[in-house]
Image (cartoon, rainbow, N blue to C red; front, side, top):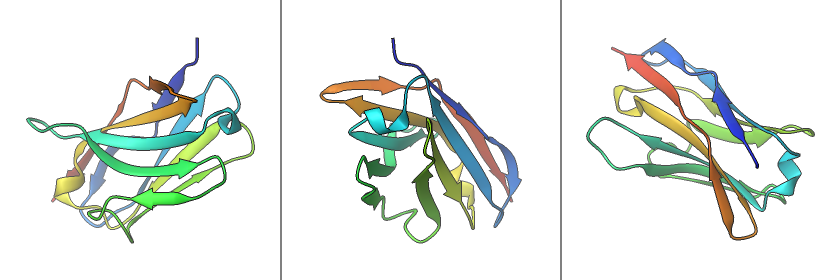
Length: 114
């Protein structure tokens, strides 16, 4: 059973930065796509960023230019978040696909204080 564990969330001031990690129980290169989603209170879960096995990235318009996704050579993907705003407050989830099978992490809370 593949497991994804997010970490790095917390409380950060408006305009600050935070780096989230998504650590997989297998090589990160085993996944066709690794993505980040987020869910704010009372809202639906939404796409934030993704990276293919080949390194191509995609970002939601709301985070483009502020968030950067990367991965290491082992089993971790990252989401570097800068210039954080109040509307970035949410639970952030990692999602990864092996073929058509998708896996979710348990989420990590990010709270941006004004």
